[in-house]
Image (tube, rainbow, N blue to C red; front, side, top):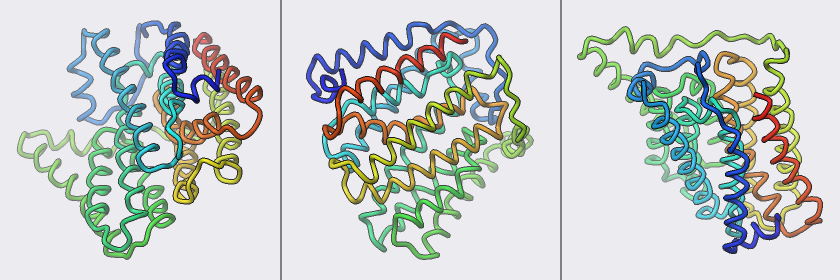
Length: 325
């Protein structure tokens, strides 16, 4: 199974699409969407689809597919994985819409979209040297836009700055460009809301959902913690392989692996403390886990029979979590 997908033949692509279809065929409409906190801008987007549930699901699903294509393109363009592979596309979709709630438009999906753009800009920073002012301007602007769509973005700002420090040559002025461009986006947005008489809505951008550090496990929530454990084990094992054993990963990619790991653990913190948005935020694991796992399954080094078992167990586990609705 893994070998067929790895070779990128027509049969491998068809098999991958069959796997994705089978893993999502248990989807059911959510009669009452969960209590999720939206920014005013995202809330306006949701209102556009009120009464058009099927249209929202189709739009959201296409949006996730486009993200999977974009992730695959980034990995190939920047040679994060030297060989072309279909695995990032498959694994991203498997993880990004595990739960029925994620088939609807949600902040985490927009978060991942903007995070992919930021990741691509950060990858360019590694080759830009000291003349990277425009890239820092891009990153700051995109982070500002991200804040308008997802409240959880505030937790990622330190992670993005730390990631830049890890992988690029920079000076203080570049960091200032990033921060100032972010602030400019917020200032322009606040001006628009003020001129339209909706300044109170803009202020509500900064009212965050309740932070609950107490983890309460009951039957209703078990699926979240099972999935967290599954993704944690998969990510740690495949990251270790990515960093220390893979033969198809460039040195540039190994250096950037720390950024993906930082994204992963920041996502884990968000999931734990932002309990209100837990359905949607589980999708935040999709980017880093897809990168490491895709490399693991694409790599010809190692026992294919073992990788087939791991891949099959991953699919079965994700389907069983969805069935345990």
